[in-house]
Length: 212
Image (cartoon, rainbow, N blue to C red):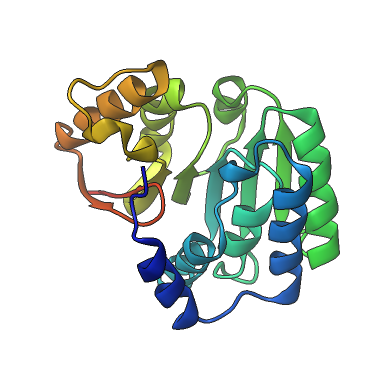
């Protein structure tokens, strides 16, 4: 299902600032070489992450799901100069690619890459977060949310990716393990009076969540 009219998406790209050469190269390399290239944030979403980060200028950022490092590099551009981004990737091969891309971009000192199960790693990082980006195992979204929300500062933000899940949450009934999990997450956030939220229909859907 095309969630966004392809002509509208092309028009949006035409009237949006272009990413730098390295991010463009990472996008091309991932699309060419990775069998799960659809997991990449892409230029429009990447620009949105960069600009959102520039608006809030965070000091401490947590990303759950590094993939090849594209979204981390978008986020780190908007951080404070002395800030630190912690990013967690389950797959060794993707983590190796991401680490190389962080070096290429000159941000390896500002990005700390963790490899392994996020549910085990998150409790070991002693930080209060300004911004959290969730883009990992869809079945665990509620677990990631509940594990990180207590360590998110008041007024801090969570961005959750893929909350439309290829349009499958629009179907009646919702079927498929991942779509059901995302629908449950969306309902969970909606019912949570600790936060306020907005679902943004960009690419595969982003949920902007602000802790009250």
